[in-house]
Image (cartoon, rainbow, N blue to C red):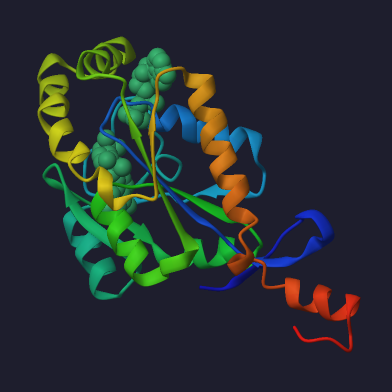
Length: 220
Ligand code: ADP
Ligand code: 5GP
């Protein structure tokens, strides 16, 4: 993965963060992702490719790159994906080139991907990846949120509820697990995690130069 240069205090160069948000559908991950992107100009969203059909209100290229099975298979064989997986009967994948470009441009990258994607990304990019899992306060509240969102039919809501337990079972594949009770409080925690992760010594590749300047004769 390319290094990124950021506007952190002192302008140290650092490695970009690959920030993964996962949750069972309806727990509030898109809401948090939207707020993060609004609040933080150095963070950019990775737009996945998918074979599922477009939902009303979705925009091709903004929400997903909507492709057919043939195109998806071609992208897989051309090794265009950083990771890809079958999710709920469709295929989803993270295009590699835009992620490389965002990191090279000094950005951190936000991923809304499932546990399989988080696992694969962690395998290939290890310490650059930060994985956050969002839990609902309860299954009842999860169902209330899915209904309140009013984007899905009864059948789709039942399907999402049916799959929620399976997704929650992967909570231990994440670095941070948060309960999204109060939306503002949860958002603040996610922001804190991102800010702290950016400051990790292992990401601050520009630190050595700074230390050398302070103490040219000393050890680094
Ligand atoms: P996801 O992306 O995880 O499927 P959304 O972000 O679409 O979930 O949230 C599902 C619904 O719940 C939306 O209507 C959203 O406004 C609402 N919501 C999100 N977070 C909270 C919260 N902390 N408390 C109450 N409602 C919430
Ligand atoms: P939806 O169809 O509701 O938008 O997304 C369904 C699930 O697919 C969500 O859990 C979402 O996080 C996951 N997903 C979206 N894009 C990708 C991707 O590129 N890779 C993987 N592994 N999962 C994805």
